[in-house]
Every structure is written in structure tokens, then in C-alpha cells.
Image (cartoon, rainbow, N blue to C red; front, side, top):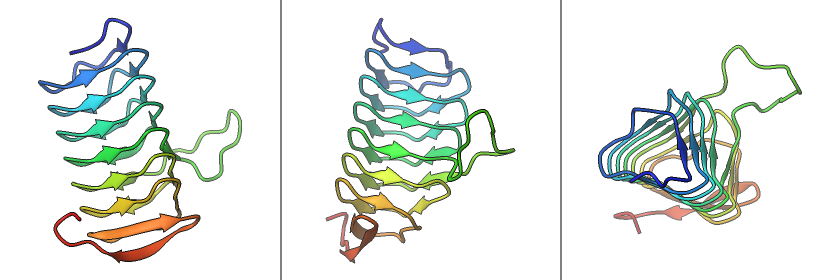
Length: 154
């Protein structure tokens, strides 16, 4: 289901995916099956989203972002793909940020470019992620720090 007020230019949208009003998806973006892209989102060209992913309102997905299956991205999460941006000066290649299967990123978090977030990771709301996070861990804070291991996704 693509809302009539969304601007979806990509033909690589999986079956059962919903894209809500005022969202923009550029032509080369790839979005898997059964995803929910909420209102006021932007998906750039070099973005790959797996299956069964939820992207809440106000999230912009920039070039270089890779999102696995069963991932939750909370509202107003900010992704960065260039740690040293300058107006009208672009890197040869944008940083790759990888979010593995089953991860959840809490509302209002900031994820610096080039970060890898492991499987089943939980990032608490408002966190600033400045380094890679191993599988099955809970991180929270500014900067985000290890809180505890997670068993069975809890």
C-alpha cells in the first residue's frame, strides 16, 4: 500500500509493504516485504531495507545505510553518513552503516556514520551511538554505553 500523498520512485518495493503520506523513496532504494514506512520519511538511493522492518515517523535514511530483517527504527532517529560534512563538498563514497537483524533503535537516537549495530541489539531512546555494538546487547546514553547482555531478544 502506497499512500497517494507519498512520492515513491523506486520499483524495488516488496509485497505487503506500506509507505505512508509525505514520504519520499528515491529510484534506486530497495525495500523488502511487509515493511511499514511511516509518514514524513525519506529514503535515499543507496539504501537497502530488509523484510518486516518498521521505520517510524520523521526518519531519513541516507546513502550507505543497510537495514536487516525484523528491525525497528523509532521516531526521529537520525542517521549520519558523513562525519565531516561541508556544504557542496561530497566524499567519494558515503560511510556504510549496517543494522543487523532484530535490532531496535529507540526514538530520537543518533547513529554516527560507519557504525555496525549487531543482531538483536536494543538502543535506548535518545542515545548517541559512536561505536560498533556487538550482538545481543542493550546500550543507552550519550555517548551510548553498554548496559547489559540481552537474552532471547528481551
